[in-house]
Length: 114
Length: 115
Image 1 (spheres, rainbow over the protein chains, first blue to last red):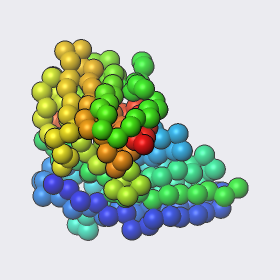
Image 2 (image 1 turned 135 degrees about the horizontal axis):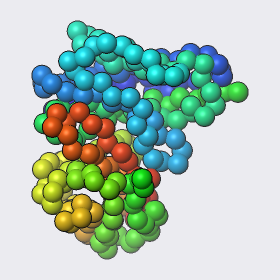
Image 3 (image 1 turned 45 degrees about the vertical axis):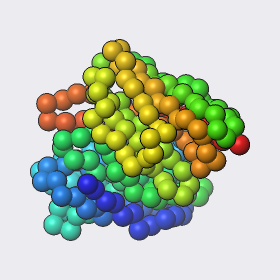
């Protein structure tokens, strides 16, 4: 079983600012995957990034980057040079290796102000 | 490639009725999961199907059921609807991989309102 804490309920930033969304997870699985999803007002969950528990290399993909720290069970997500279209609710979700079941946090609502 | 398709998009039902929601996964995806999203409880896992078999079930009453067909399309059914069943129901499909290292792709959801 997994548990997720997204301590930031709502964040507001001005366009072009960088913003980091925090995620702390709990899992008993030794192998697991971590995901970030975005949910715009339309309702559909859009996949953003995936990370394996055995690969702590942090990467950058366009304006997105992530910081995975297994020792502190954190998987933070950063948007660089935010845009108004980034306004959405962002969810962190771990998943054990033996299942396709995602456990979602409460989400962080990001508002990017022009 | 078409995405995950959920029908209908919106539904209004009366308490006590039953409802069936449909989900067509991305072609080739054999795993289908269902989630319920409400303002109070957030996103909660309902169940997951793989090759017509239910592999996992969340903590929901027996009024919630589902099935998967041989073409991987899935339906979920809620009987004896309650006001608290009003929610956005999201379906997700995942490709199969030996390591399980794949992401889920979500449909746009079915917004169910129980009156």
